[in-house]
Length: 306
Image (tube, rainbow, N blue to C red; front, side):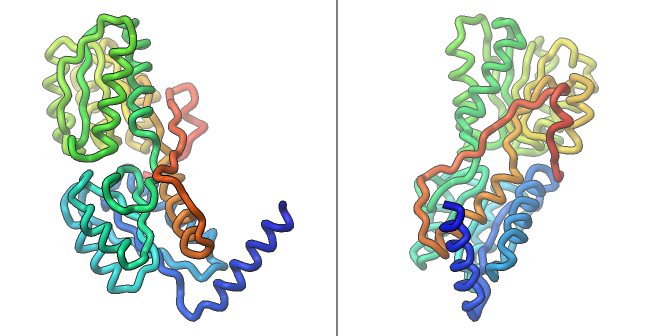
């Protein structure tokens, strides 16, 4: 098997060297400084791993998730002659036409972190968002000893990843024979300042727990909890690991985060596109990266880039 694999690699390198032009893979994702730098680091690592295969990744960034600028980036990448596209779609359906237009040019598309499931994209590389929410729900139920008042801060209702996390969280809470009341589900628009303001208001409502399902909003909510001095009474379960979140985890203000390994999501997306373009490899509609629960006791085992 190893010999066959080596032969396969040698053959691919030979084919790569015989190409007159680089194999170009376009990437579209937000320029926000939390979460997405980890995806970019994974993309760059995949590019480095394919240096012998004449592959070039070209990244174009929107200002913010869901700002509607993805189509402009796609058009510019098409003008550059890309052979594959990896994209973080900021809306469940609004990019379907743009994605389908790319696919109809025989250019495979992979979505990263969140999805446009009704488009013609090849596959989505992400965590299982619904299961991600379920894990958070189980954690919260245990932290509260199955009773209390809980609020949910989500990003956008129309972003598949965010909506599925909420659904999974609520279903997990309901699955327990508990006295947990969900008092509100609020959109933060994935904005740390808005998340701070919303969390600041929520902690005045005698809540016992808050689940925050995006990385940026987790930062805002953590600062609000610290400022209110209610972090010993209010259990916060957040999302993803960043340099900003590490002190909050260490101090116990964030009881746990669900780590989605955005580095691996970016890496996998590029490797999948390379396999599809060069070898016709078949992939299913999803390629899930395993989520991990991080607390202050296993924090040192993980690395982040943002």
